[in-house]
Amino acid sequence: MSRKSRNVQAGYAYHITTRCNNREFKLQRWECREVFLYAIKQALDKYKFKLYGLCIMSNHIHYLIEPTQTDDLPKIMHFLNWYTAMCFNRMLNRTGHFWERRYFCDGFPAADRERAINTLRYIHGNPKAAKIREGFFYEFSNYGSYDQLTNDGLTQWHPAFLQLGNSLEDCARKYRGFCQRYNPKSKPARKSNWGNKLLAGLDLKGGKGSKEDGRSQQHRTNKVEVSPPHPTPSSSPSSSSPPRCQVSESPQVRAIATQFIRANQAPRRE
Image (cartoon, rainbow, N blue to C red; front, side, top):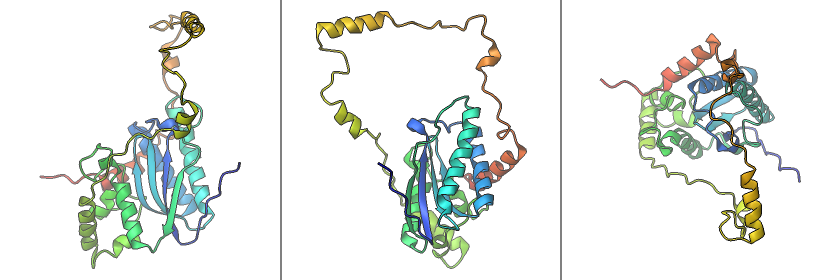
């Protein structure tokens, strides 16, 4: 059965979530997040869309995007996922799918102020919900650009934010207070209901079973080969080192990431 096509409408903003395959924490490395910011810059230059919200977590990404053309959204996401997967697989010395097959996408009219502000707060509240930050400031989220009115080089303020007050300082103050009243709930680990139903009634622990099952299990156990704890002398040290990725070593990557991080990091308290 073919999957349902997305209904992309003109004048809509879209909350998008992309997760690493198998929900693995493949974005923990600082260099990977810097490359991701660089990829966003390339996509912005290519498709001229508006990026209102961004948060790069260890195993997923949140965006709030308003495309210029209705058919640009799948092109934007295809470019971002393809470009970053190519870079990350090389940086992490891996192969195969890096991202889950399909990203989450929820659209609403860009003029919906309440929905926009709540979506921004949800995106910016992810580090706090994950308990990796006590507040909302986070180096790889654009909350700081809203709170401190800074320019991170990638994102822009949503029109709903600009309507919160009579001045930019008033808008920032009201959004800051709105976020401080937010109490995110911790997210429990998701379970596969389909898998639970399929495996219902099966003895996966090998506790009670027939004698034949026991003999076959013992036979399989005896055939397991244990790999040596140390590499053999013939293996060279360079074979285990990951290949170099020229994109991650580019000065442009560092410049784009530095501007974004400095604009969004927590202010220094004297």
